[in-house]
Amino acid sequence: MKKSLLAAVCVLTLSFSACGSPAAAPQTPAGAAQEIVNCGRTQKFDGRPQRILSMNQHATEVLVALGVTDRIVGTAYPDTPDVPAAIATDYAKVKTISQKYPTLEQLLGTEPDLVVGGYASAFAEKDGRGRDALEAKGIRTFLLSENCPDATAAIGTYTDDLGVLGRLLGATEQATKLIGETSKAVDEVTAKVAAANKPAVPVFFYDSGEQAPFTVGGRGLGNDLVKRAGGRNIFADVPKVFGDASWEQVGDRAPEVIVLVDYLGDNGGVDAKRRFLEGHPLAKGTPAVRNKRFVTLTLPDLIEGIRLPAALRTLTAGLHPDLAK
Image (cartoon, rainbow, N blue to C red; front, top):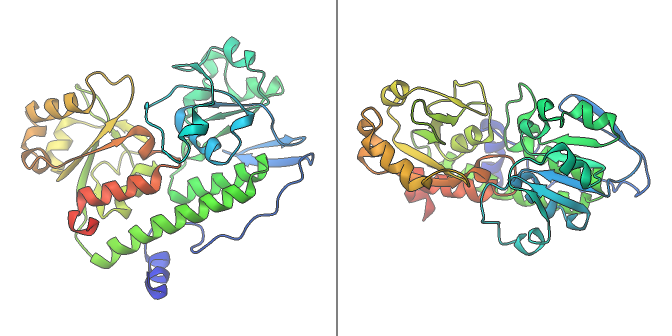
């Protein structure tokens, strides 16, 4: 990529906090006290967490990629049986304590000193897992920042979290490496799309729902990905990471590509979703359904985690096939 083009992309497109290769952050001594701010909460740590419970698959994948598998005492709520090849061997070493969220008793049974959540629901107060309740028991918490209240996420949300977790866990070298790899991969695609200067393709993300479509809103990483891929999320005006829309809006906004979101526990999978859309009185008239332009991404592809660069390449190829050559 030409240096001048990269500079233009950094200025003119949605970009990271800084472009180029990140400098390695100083390693925090193993026994040193630390203080971090996460979702507006300030927490103090006497040293590096040694017993980490990770809730939600994408959060676990991040921790494994940071090289702290030996400190993960359990994971919960997997979204897909497939794990990126680069971490599959280490990920298989992590014990799954629950297919959904664990009970408070199951959580406490792992004796964690840190609980990392991928979604805000990981810390549901009604189930006794609220952040205040856990911290009152001496258990520190971390929520991936895409799900902070009122946050509007972009790729930089993920790379910033990598930096914080890297310092907290004593994995700054690996965090710096992951930030650099993510930045390079995403910058390359973003620059290629910007150089092509094609009209933005209207995209509908179909997660689930028959009475009303559940879709990607304007505050999630999926919205940032589709912009970078040369598309336009037709529900960017939904002020959530994921939220409900209406079938009348789907028909009126005429998506040219539909992204089918694949995950465990979704009855019938993406084939059932495609058939439903093809038979729906409003959806079947959209250009996407008429022209059979569907892209499949897993749920972890669209949220904060290590899959984002690959998901961006897949989405770009689905929107602009000529750019995949």
